[in-house]
Image (tube, rainbow, N blue to C red; front, side, top):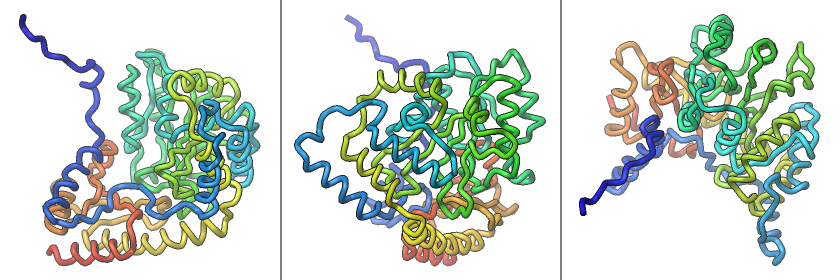
Length: 399
């Protein structure tokens, strides 16, 4: 009998393995050869959570009754802590029983939101440049992806004339718009009125805006939520908006996978219907430790354990950018530095590959975030100052 070869699902032809997943294999091979690569590419905080957070996890883990399945909608303790955090950080009132949904990270939240709101063939609007997962998940789920431009000359803000032209096309059936301020990868903050204009556009053309908001506490003196609108009430914003937030960046907990979805009760119920069929809740110890972090990590803790450290690293990143002949906006926030490559470089990958193989430093090329990032690089601040100083030394010696 002839043996038939297995074939993957056709949807896999729409996406590639995540760039960093592929590239880190090459970096691991180079390190195995003794190349000692310094990675300045990944946004994975290298500092630990607060001591009280870790102690709470250990305390709960030692209890014999802590290891069973947990509610998919999260423990009451965690939902209440998330609601308090939103009030304390953004001044936004959130009902912990109906407007908060803990999630196993924001990336998973993106999947659940898209499954809950978007039918195959309907349109999802994605920023260019932007987080690649917005595109990949939409494509895997059969949605149509339309890009809207963010450009340096416009401060990486949406072009609302272009946006309105897109969403007004009835043939597209726009259902969802992803936005992300503070923006990754450019570090731009939403200019005054952007959230209001997004709410107004969503109301006019009846689609949902999702703000992915994990960077609001990193080198950002004025944390904002999409519900902090100036002209619209928070209730009106909730009618058309969802916000994802995460403890990965702000509380040094990337591997813990604790995220949160803030939305009106109707949206939460739809997302929960998806979530309850995919996962079975997070370990109770993680949830109660996350609640401890949200309640007890003070502004002083964030300043000492995050802001001051990232500020020192940021200065080194700026020196690296300058050494590479790149230009950048010093007003950026977040845990990356985004810079434009010099005109003398033919393309960004020529530069990043040369830096990788000659200086043994891994930095991210901007094209992975979209076509509007093709002349840019991104440097992560998630490396020790000693490593960043060594990376700077190597790049200066590269010649």
